[in-house]
Image (tube, rainbow, N blue to C red; front, side):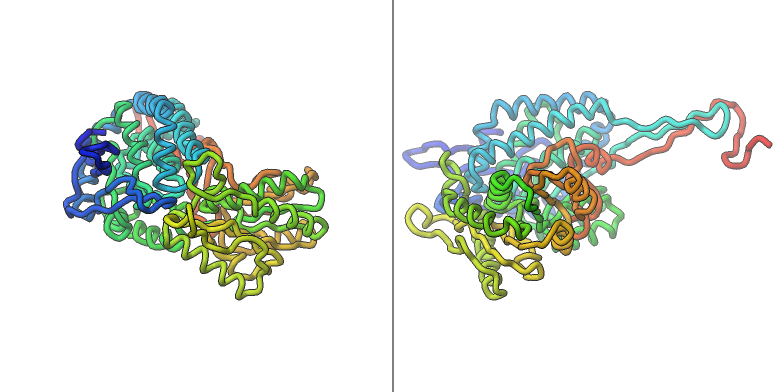
Length: 512
């Protein structure tokens, strides 16, 4: 990045100069028209300001959309393989910068280094995958019903696309949106989450260094009502992709519909992991711990409900709770730490409120439940890994998304009962089952009401080349990743070439 845009941390006269990040519009780093900024603080140590960002407004959005519109006129004409080569080069750049970007991400988001390295790696993987798609934007050729007539369908870019991304995967999820969009020939404006904008800046810097022209990708930082709303409402923006809560998704979807925008919504989850009596119990325990407490439970795919058959219920709980109590919580920059903080104070308050709700409902808390705020924890938003058992499936703690390190363990009679419990929820993102019975495994794949199902693995671990998304309140039917993203960021055009040199009337001129 330009030195006058993102400086430090540098020692100047014995003090540390905080990075100041500007918006990226039309290939230039520019301050917000508003003149206002906000701080990106480390949730593990809120005394540290990671960077300062622009608190943008509608005027900034308008400038970014205008830049993207101008860039689209040329970018759509660049051959797709050439566009893809730039994305491939960005992957190579990200590999070189992986450790630095992972450390930046841990400082601004809180999750542990092994996870932030994985987040950057996911962006690398997405870049390699989408680079390949530059030579695979396939469309069908089909026989015409008339002689001397050729018929085919081709993919075309949509135009200017808006992206609104969350804080929990601040490089991976932007890569899911930006990379297929630009390979398909679109131009973009991205609004990263205000808690984690630096990781998105790092991704876009790699793409810029790889040769993506000015105006193709623009970043406008700020808050939802001040940036996200005008971006969604802008008439020139032809597609909106949101990853966020179901409540926000309803608003964005309704707004986008007013101007007939393409709209992709990847929303909440309340993901079940089923453990049957015949499961490899040690494997299920390991999977449940990783699924429930990885990323401090701050994943839309987090394992928030574990449904355990009664034959192994008590044994599972005994070992699961014992292991959960040993999870080391702390600053994610410490390689020995297994779970970092909540991303901010509001998320911590939400976690604590659901813990109180669960107690009031009668769920039995057997582990955790307390904020950690002494000693090394006093300047961060830390919570103990928390486990509730004997949870009734109808309790709020088993129905509503917490987005924290809080897991509910629910007993079930058999597989049919487990499937019933798993499906009796408004969401349908991810699901998992642990069993050694291949027949039950395939029946679960068929019967679990979710966009993703894992067999003998937890509810987290999606890969970039398969479609990602869910059913019911989890989204509106679109998918990210794999061919699903290509489908969203392109429009079909049917093409007919008549070389008969005469008028032929389809459905009318038929042989007798």
